Length: 268
Image 1 (cartoon, rainbow, N blue to C red):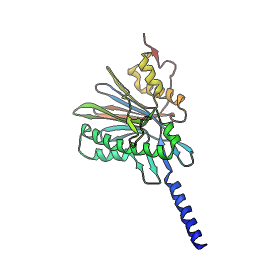
Image 2 (cartoon, one colour):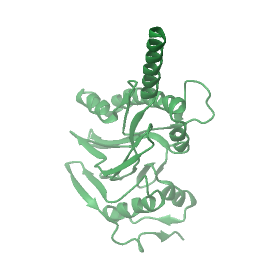
Image 3 (cartoon, one colour):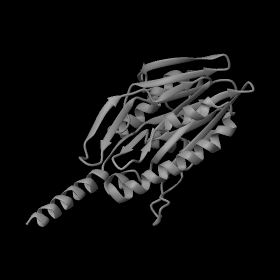
Image 4 (cartoon, one colour):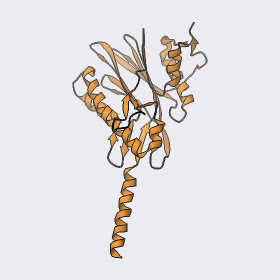
């Protein structure tokens, strides 16, 4: 009888540990827009942060700044911004990039290092989700699981880099992610859209609309509001924005869309 009790206790405790090891908290969401001209850049993001508990399937929301400055580099993350599981898998991209920026390497040198580190980390998370939280895995197919935009001046010129990965639904092995499409448009102005930016991408791809880049500061919140209206649980107002110049920057917090009717003009 004593043996059976010990066996029951061992099995119950082991089962509890297994269940415990299969839970995680994930912070994700975001729409990030970056516009660059020859001498000025704008970096904007929404402020709605969703945290999902994969064990209880509860989602909590809060407002959070998602674009940052480290020395002369400006950056933002979308998709998974923070991941911690009870079985030891963790991912804090801000800490990773900040650590790399402490070195005296150029952005050109930092980019491949950050790319390699985050690819491996995000792939581990995707495989974890596939094994332990299939509903969350499926919910993130078709959208960047993780993306980052970072911008900075080097040698008096603006440089920008993007890192973006999405789940590869055709994969059957340990490698579960692939490089996401580079949603950028280059002309007189280079534009990057990462995260939840379906409406913006479709408008540009169809050539249906054009933007007034002389009024970018006021237009970016309206662009993000289109995504917030579409993805109410993922993206939310207000918007934070950096305007980046060769001799400094301006930071605007808590921006809203003030003139949505006249924002978009149909191209001829």
